[in-house]
Length: 180
Image (cartoon, rainbow, N blue to C red; front, top):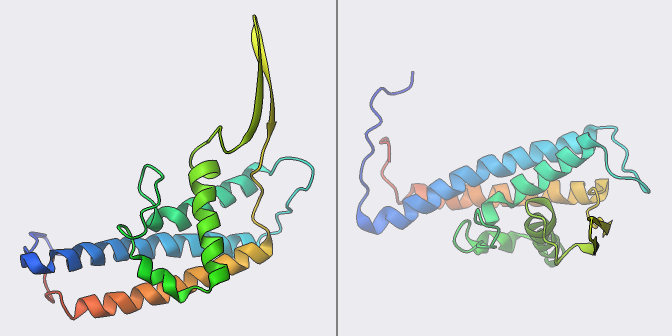
């Protein structure tokens, strides 16, 4: 049964950064778990990636959800990469250089294509007429292919292990058996 009184213990001031980090890591585990579930769904699905027409709504939704939920621990709500402040950048050390590059590509994809529409990043040409306009828009956004989704699944598992290790360290520093 859930406790009826959730009055939180005020931790000593020198432990506040540890508690803030633990909370951030706790939330990051949820985000990464969600991203891993979406990656698993994409890998198990029979959705075809179209080559010459736009993605289907379902494929678009799953790709959007995957990129956004994966990136959540590493960006602020305004799209600026703040890995050092949100989730410690040191956790990314478990990734190979290729995995780190892919991680950075996903963060950029989230910031410029998926969560925001950046007209400077996208290939867009507009012609204005007195009674309207016309445009040519070359969508750069493509669905992640199965090898990329598998690679992301592996990255998420590595990050989950790194987060759990860091949480184990923090649990030795924080008070036990109290709500904080």
